[in-house]
Amino acid sequence: MSLFTLAWLAIWTVQLTPVQLLLPLQLDTPEDDWIRGVVSSGLVLGIGGLAGIVAGPLAGALSDRARPGRSRRRPWALAGVWTTAAFLVLTGFCAGPWAVGGAWVGVSIGVAVSSAAFTAMIADQLPTTQRGAASAAVGSSQAVGIVLGVGLVVLLGLDIVSGYLLLAAVIAAVGSAAALLLPDPSSAETVRPETVRPETVRPETVRPETVRPATRDRRRLASLRDRDFAWMLAGRLMTNIGNALGTALFLFFLLHGLGQPSSTAQDNLLLLIVVYTLFVVAASVLTGILSDRTGDRRRLAVIATVVQAASGVAIALVPTFEMTMVAAALMGLGYGAFSTVGLAFAADLLPDEKDHARDLGIVNVTAALGQLIGPVLGAGLVALVGGFWLVFVAATVLSLAGGVLTALARQPQRS
Image (cartoon, rainbow, N blue to C red; front, side):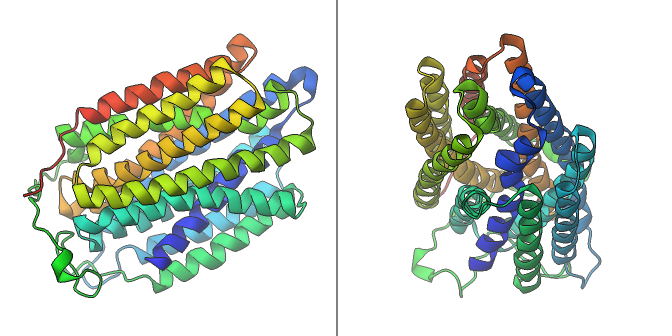
């Protein structure tokens, strides 16, 4: 579990630090034309998200079909890690929206491939009573990764190129070590997620559960024909778009929505991210444990979307830095809970055990698609009204829509 958490910490650090800080700084434009910088940033993030949507499920499906006796996830994890590192270096030396966008596509592909491989290990090797804890590791690592990356760049006073080089070194070292050291059962081994491993779970803590039957539907993307799995995916997509709307343009909001100088905005961005992180980590850990004990992941996920929606209401009504701090706390609380419980809920709803990586790659696509649609939609809304209020209203509406769609998926019952 420690290695798994470190892997995700590295992934989130190198993916979200550019999104929150480095890319906006690269693409920012003069004050009299600042909307063009917002639009350029949104398009770059959107194109990268589109690349991840294709690469993640494809890599997952190919790893599911590994030859007997071969490692299933490790080769793809290593390939994704090294691809990410190489294109991070390239992105740092690029200038202009087109060059930066092209290099960021390579970063997004690498992140999507490695994420698909590492995520599949949850369903490959963990029983349902431990999926909440593993998902909490993923969710809390996301928040800590933002703080780690942005904190290092801001506190060390690194320029854009040095920031990217640091991120490349982090993913190359930590990601490679985790991929090589994590257990990776070969495709010839049968590792059912409902099987409790005695070395990781005490027998007295194991409770019998009803297991969703394997469908054995070999049609392409057959999982999307599963009603509950499809509703869950739709809910995750809406909620992730709502989160991306509320977070992807944070630096631009501080610079041009609140009129703060660049150095002040960078310091305040770090402060907002720290607040966001504290609440994400707390919510991830608590809801992960609670969902494992109760098994009612759907209700917890729906409540989380309502809390996330409240953050958009707060900042839309009172657009000050102090209220932005409150909104960051609410956003962290809601999204931390949703990302943890929602991922565990998705693992519970997997239709076919033979396609874990492919189907969890599709689940990861909802996050990637949120990163695609959120910044592009946000940039369009900013350009439409010449400000940020409509962005936060849309984030509220989409978060609530995500809760409604998630509620339509049936929770597998425990006996």
